[in-house]
Length: 67
Image 1 (cartoon, helix red, strand yellow):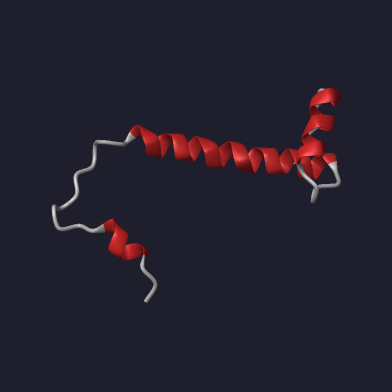
Image 2: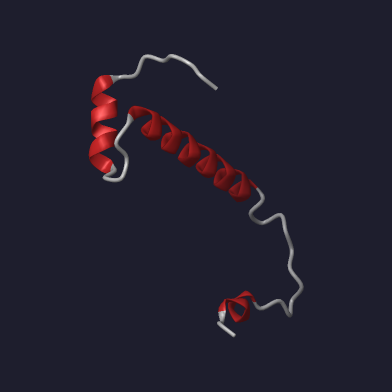
């Protein structure tokens, strides 16, 4: 989707200082959108904390072990 936006130059400069692998404003905005969506999805997962019950024999640590 093509669009024109006005960005805060100081904020853009600060963002560029925080990432070394991004060279263009387009890449910067795209990365910001990706991270925004990921954080919102994580927040939604936190909303269900305590609302799911697991079987008493469920051992999540055993699932972490490499086989």
